[in-house]
Amino acid sequence: MEQRLSAARAARAAQDELLVELRGHVATVTLNRPKVLNALSFGMLQGLARNLDAWERDERVRAIVLRGAGGKAFCAGGDIRALYDGYRSGRDPHHEYFAFEYALDYRIHACAKPIVAVMDGIVMGGGMGIAQGARLRLVGARTRMAMPETAIGLFPDVGGSWFLSRCPGELGTYLGLTGITIGAADAIYCGLADACLGGDLPPPQLERLRPAIDRHFRHESVPAILGSLEAEDRPELRAWAGQTLKLLRSRSPTMLVVTLEELRRGRNLSLADCFRMELNLVHGCFEQGDFLEGIRAVLVDKDNRPRWNPRGISEVDPETIQRFFAPRWKPSAHPLAGLSRQPPRKRKQ
Image 1 (cartoon, helix red, strand yellow):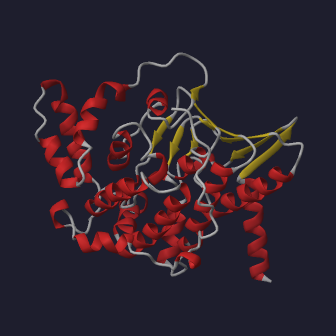
Image 2 (tube, rainbow, N blue to C red):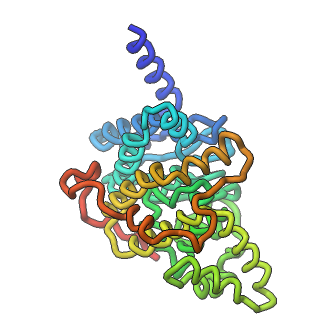
């Protein structure tokens, strides 16, 4: 009886976390956890999937809109604190959560009906995952976009190996390794948004930095990128190079190397294979330990002093990195084996 009551409460909570409306021929779903910046619970992911199932079959629905409640965020990512607590208690919820999330993200990319993502406010991590597959990605003056996973010992997942590796030049490498936050103009410039809602945009800041970013982040190893930044001697770029070095040295050394390898591989993979690779990697993150330590430092103890293992980039073992990418399943047994190998529709650049 207790289990049935608990399941019923969970179902009601998940229902409250998504506000669904059908007006005319447009279905709108609002992520409704504003107190936690609309972080994605497992129930929200399941609810989104159920709604997509229904709307794809419903002839009344001609378009779908995704938005966030509260005015501060579209979605600040997945509910990683819940995953942390579950893992520590021995429940290992990540096995199901990430496979389900990645499959949902893929479905949004492949949805037959046009989806519009209104990316107002904060858009990070899992929020990028459900937004980047939308047919039309709208930003606004309050948009603050990032893939900050290396700061918590993770890598840019939720399709990041696909959409970051397809940014112009080395912009995606820069965004993925540093995890910096960008605004609306830079999101459009990087190809991570299509249009801005209301008002004129200032020139993108990354346009000015693009030659330097391409120069320093084109290298095929993290030590080479760091060395290139250290050698930057142009007066107008010294401060930027120094700030970038400081940022990179605060990130998990292991995950910097994993992220660079992930993005380089992603350039030549289909969208489905990118998600399959990422699911392989995320299991490695729980085993290696920096992800759990990053969550502890940022979200649990909040001391912002993660103890990475190893602490320095020179100590990262190449064999450890290769274990992240070693297949965990036979292709037919992969949890995401059912994803089509066909690429998604092409975007205009």
